[in-house]
Length: 107
Image (cartoon, rainbow, N blue to C red; front, side, top):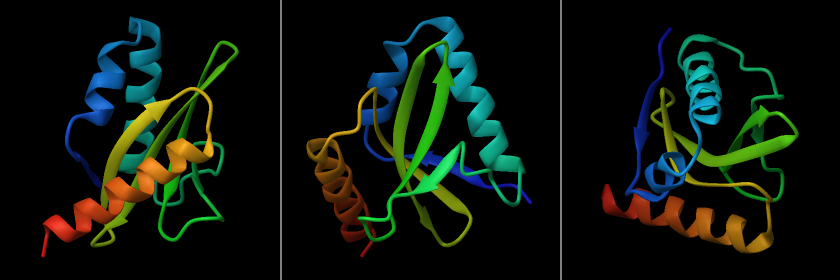
């Protein structure tokens, strides 16, 4: 089983480009895991209980945790939104808005 990862708009790309090489490598490692592994450990991918359909990818490097919001589309697709260090309600609201925009743009 292989999941396809697509990027909605450029929120994640801008975040990714600002990271150092080691963080980028760790993000790539987690992405590969998500693409290949049937049941992804919650350490790497967690459903946000307070939201409908929103997940966060967690990438730990040194003492930092990088969070990347995503959702599933057609079962196979992981769609990535913004990335950030500290999860705030503002970030969750933004991710929910982006997820809504993504699904509305497909109609």
